[in-house]
Amino acid sequence: MAFTTRIFFQVGDEVEVCSKQDGFHGSYYEATVIENLGDKYKVKYKNLVEEDDMSTALEEIAAVDEVRPVCPKVWPDFFPGERVDAFANDGWWAGIITRKSGDYWFVYFPSTFEHIAYPKNHIRLHLESRRNGWVSRDGRVFSCEGKPLSCKKRLRIVMGGSSSTSVKARLV
Image (cartoon, rainbow, N blue to C red; front, side, top):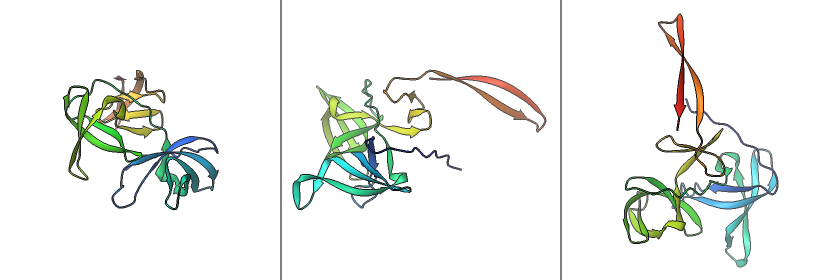
């Protein structure tokens, strides 16, 4: 069972919009909410323009499940195999670090089978939006500012149906 939390955005909020179009699936584009339509948002893109007028920012309607807060830009010391987002073609694309050469990190994109080198400031740690912040693939939790969070949670484990024990778990 998937757990989802709806985040409500207001006019003027900066967001990222996930594309579900063929060839762009899974890429995220920076935008600003310009109208709240209930189950959809009208957004104005930061880096995308109208086809017939390259001087006008593209505006379009996005479903609620395609809109998320702006992902914090987290630049740790990347390592091969780490999931990242690379900024290319006006949006953020999910890929995997394969190696470093000088000041460039090579990113492999499974969806297109491409392998491209990027400077560190064009890639960020791939994070998923969650209710309390952002989570990396390996379970690291980050605040909206991109700082690692250290939090304690109490887990309730039911054993044998009747007795229970409280356990403290530390998330890093």
